[in-house]
Length: 93
Image (cartoon, rainbow, N blue to C red; front, side):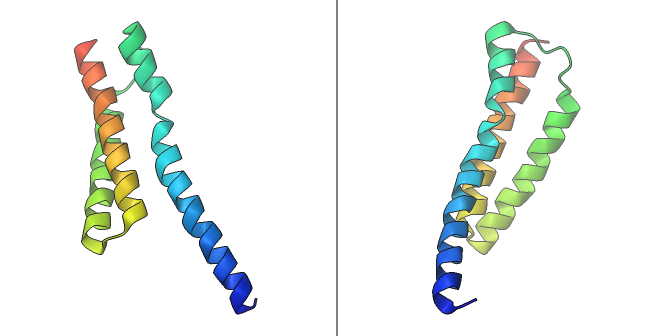
């Protein structure tokens, strides 16, 4: 692969990672909607969402320590959106 192709590939991957960093956390929105708008928490595991939050918090700290912007953006979004789900579960128990 030539330098020009590597440069193009790197730019594409750099843009794709931001799409994944934002798009991935947005996948929690249907769960948040279901909990907050319907009050239905059946089949939702509080322990699982807490573990997701802990895991994402570690990734967020990693991103901050290494100054890795996509990991920081993703980590912040994951933690915030997971906390929205957790609070919704607790409110609607």
